[in-house]
Image 1 (cartoon, rainbow, N blue to C red):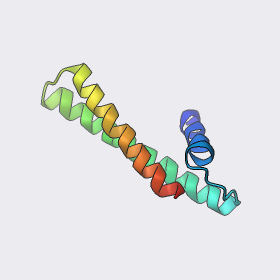
Image 2 (cartoon, rainbow, N blue to C red):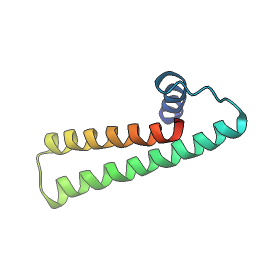
Image 3 (tube, rainbow, N blue to C red):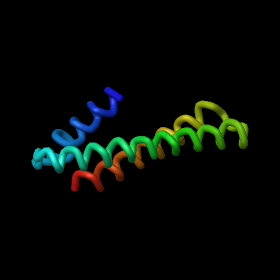
Image 4 (spheres, rainbow, N blue to C red):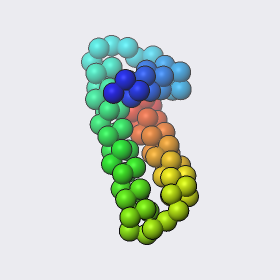
Length: 83
């Protein structure tokens, strides 16, 4: 939870430079951010399950593919929230 909170603050202020700090906006963005990070976790779990359990892929290759997809999802989700 703390790492996602840190990511929220870093994305809001440093990455996307979102200036609106009204409580209503911050709460709305935070709820969206945490929800979409949960969706990223589900995608992460699904990719690993399919890649490792069903396809019997190489753990390193599956994890690299997984991380590329999850990082991409997190960026797109964050851009949508803070833009």
